[in-house]
Length: 212
Image (cartoon, rainbow, N blue to C red):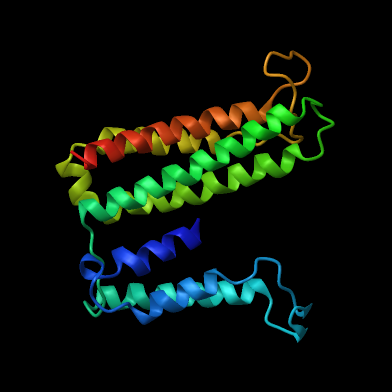
C-alpha cells in the first residue's frame, strides 16, 4: 500500500501535472519501498551480507520526511488536483477489488472451518491492506480537504473511513473459513470480504463524484 502511494507521489502528486521534474527524495523513497520484502542480514541472491528489509524501509521513511520538510519550506511540490485524487482513489479501489477476489478464491477452495491453515494468511493480508489504507486515506482527506469540501464528499469520505475502522475492530484469535451459512464454523473470510466490498463501493462513489 505504501509502495502504491510512493508511486503516485512520484508520478503525479509530487509533480505539477505530471510534467515537471521528479522530486529526488520521492524517487529514492519509491526505490527503497520496492526492496525485497524478506531480505535479512545474509542472502544467496546475491550471495553475501546485505542490509535487511526493515533498514531499507526506514530509509524510505527518512526520504519521505525530507520531502515533507521541503514542502513546509515551499521547496517541493504537492499537486492536489481533483484528477490526481481520482486516479489515486481508482487504483486503491482496484487493489481492494483484487484482494476481495483472493478471499473469494480461498472461500471456494476450502470450507474446513478452524482447520483451514491457509485462511489466516488471506485474512491478515486483507486486514493489513485495510489498516494501511485507513491511515493513507485519512491523510488523503486532509491533503485534499479543499476538493473534498468543494465536491461535497465530506459525508461519503467519513462513511468510508468509519467502515474501515469497523473492519479493523474484527480481530479473531483464530481464523475460521467455514461455509457462510455454518453455525459452528464461522466464515471470517466472508465477513472481511463484505467489509472490503463496502469500502470499495464508497471509493467507487467518490470516484464517480470526482469524474463529474
